[in-house]
Amino acid sequence: MTEKPGVVIVCDWFDPAFRAGGPVRSLVNLVSLFHTDYNFRIVCGNRDYGSDEPLPVETGKWLDWQGKARVMYLNAADLKRSRMFNLLDEHVTEKDVLYVQGIFSLYFSIYPILWWHRSKHSKLVVAPRGMLHSTARSVKPLKKKIFLTLARVFGWFNNIDWQSTQPDETAEIQTVMGKKARIFEAANIPAPIMPLEPVLKNQGVLKIISVGRISDEKDPLLLLKALGRITVPAEVTFIGDYADEAYFNTFSTAIKQLPQTIAVNHILSVPHGSMAEYYKQYDVFVSCSKGENFGHAIAEALACGLPCYIGENTPWKGLQHENAGAELALDSNVFAAALEAYCKLSAEGKAEMSRAAHNFALQTFQPDMYRKQYNSLFHMEDFDDE
Image (tube, rainbow, N blue to C red; front, side, top):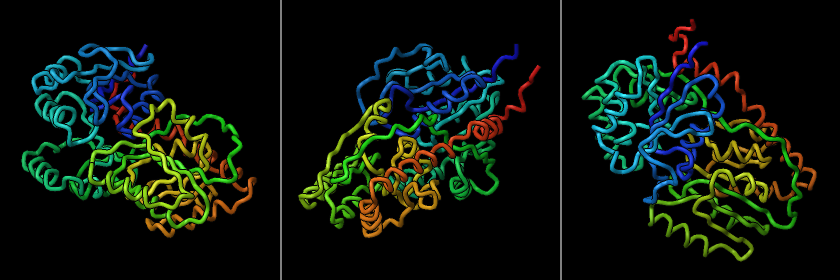
């Protein structure tokens, strides 16, 4: 029996962590879909994004994850260069692929990359996860510019393989790393699509859900401005944590200035397993994000039959053509007009959009395409099939 090729994933967060959003969902969906193809081992931290509380897991030992992977969670005391180097020395073989998530994490990106340059005995793939997008680089720009300059000077990113999830990200990587960078496109994998469960929606109030950090990059203020311009009663729920206190205060002030016909709820976080139940309670999903590398929240909303009204700077194209929502210019008047138009639809018109959104998600989920892309990314042709 042929042994499955090994992939060692190094990342800051993995299930049951969920607050980091897309990066965690990308890995969970990858492992869930391809655990029969690859032997996955995951090394990660034992804190959720933005939390000082440890996850309810044992640390420093290999744990089974749903029978699909082995995971080692590291506590704060383990986050040392020597510990990471020793761990990779012990558990990454010459035939394994070392799969690093992100580029700015000292313990889970930089140290593993430096270890690889020293060892040179495994394949290295780095997934930037949108961190090289101009919007992402504009956050703490001086610090990131200095790091990227030093990385080029010392050759930390020389001779590695990059994962891009779509053509725009390929261009972003080339802009920062140069035209000669070795880039393989392998799309982010959405969760499997479940059958659509028709739910009778309230026809009197427009119910909107928006999932994402309360931050300038996600721009929930634009949605609040749009809500201030619509003439129909609406209820919007924002689900997302925040790190920028000043931005959150501006967000909170804007909520208080909305007309009384607009109700706003804010929830810091919801475990991913509960999100489908949330989506079912709403009419539409709205995101005014300035850019998305993928947008798992968009994929999951579509899968639950929610028409999606999103900014135009995401990989999700053709929503309006397929009657599944729309990609919109990042202008509050444009979003307001789109939401007003949705409200004018008949009950059957809204139900048709819900079915179209679900069908759009079904068309996106293509396991055979993902398998071909990830086999190329991980260079499976290099493994001996005997």
